[in-house]
Length: 292
Image (cartoon, rainbow, N blue to C red; front, side):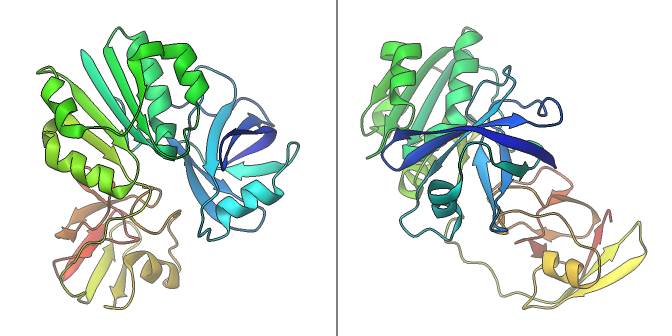
């Protein structure tokens, strides 16, 4: 964890504020475009926010939209946080990294611009042919985008099939925004060239939960996981808590390595080989051996 001072809070669009966070005991940890942090609020809630400032700068910047049906996080940020307050934040994690390419297309919906903004800046600085289409009732960072990127940015509802038809053969696409936009992007763009980030899990149907055993290789413990429990919760009850954030399979903070067995991956992150997210993922085999 890191301790940070809220240096500034400023409105940047209707219902959206940007927070500048400064390290209190030295520089904040380095990060790369696409990274996010956990912000632990004084009301004990933890929320994840994409870093949307300059990776080479000394401070972090995040943007928070007031959610119409807030679960207490965005409401607290807007109504109670003020400059001068100290907060706890995690080290940056990046489950949405920028890949090098000759051409980048970025498609943002509303607050979905936050992970894409530093990506756009980095890709443009590398010499890539970049374009951004930004849509939504609220358009965070619109003036900054116009100033820095001019006509490479369009503020309009994206015609994804038309954009796909215009892409060069080596182009990659990054998309972040509401679920209907992401679902359409997954239908239109080739999977091997598309990168999406979700703030909420999709509604999906899985096979019924079954009981299994989590074998913790390093500790020698075997933890039963009942159908009504998550693997994350079963480990906590057994006295082996794992750090976690969203508990929805989106943020990646609870990542674990597994050594044997067949995981049932139910996350939205896309677990790399040998890894899973125990807040939502289970096991298709009777035993799942964890590096714990």
